[in-house]
Image 1 (tube, one colour):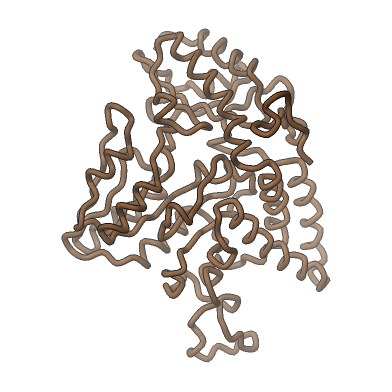
Image 2 (cartoon, rainbow, N blue to C red):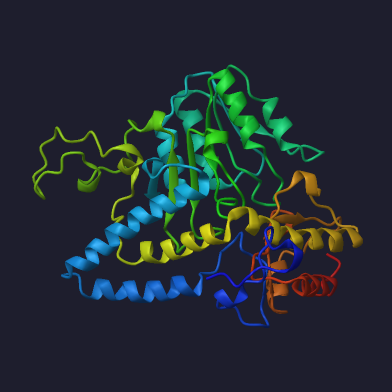
Length: 392
């Protein structure tokens, strides 16, 4: 399925994979952190699975969907070092964060730690939680040296109930050492909740090393999955928590349809009890498993190294122009947020898109997020377009 490796780095990096995507040659798409384009194999799988819905009486189609759901659970588990039993399929990151917020205890006077400019899906639930129970929301300010890990660690103490963060800040790719945070959380008895949306599928994340209580990732970015198909890791110590939704397929002892007894709400074993309602979608699992199995074949470490070549080139070009960004040692390999002293035009995205170049403006940063379909000359095209922008 992959298009081969190159030169002396055969074991480290992948060659360009553009042929596996439907991206015209004149498009410079450096925006995977916003929307990961579907693989062509996923598109074909989706077209085929749509036809299953056209013939819902076919029992074989239902069996295929059930199999694909479990394959998705297992495949995502492979990517994060987990057993399938710890993985739930959910609608979105915000859905998973809501489950975590309802499951984890917070006492009056305790604090929940987040970072400045944290993504809303992993912020609002904690803000509301502190207001409901009389706790404090601690917002860690952006450190001048981009050392988020040390900055967060200084705010974790024995009064901390939850640390809610991510492997990197979504606006600029500045990195956070989750293993170090997990270790500190265990020392003080705090829970760790991770929004891995901007990293799962693009870099190695091992839940055995991090030991999060919950880790959630939307699938439509670096996991190359369709929309409204996301993944929740729940540590085994939380498998007895109450799911957000109660429906037949989360029950241990499934009664005849429509015959609810009232004593059957213990839930299915493992994290499956947290699965979203209508998980038996005949379309999305087929698309998602094509993507997840391709990621496993590519291998996350090779994906990361391959994309890192491009973000390093972005950094060099930006530094040549006197721009600011998290330095290489303080950012992930696949996202780089660039700031300039005069700021960016409010319509930055639209201006660049008119030149066939696609990035995101996030806060005061131009976020560049390349992938395996990009080449070095596309970084040059990006900065040629940037140089044509007005001064402010």
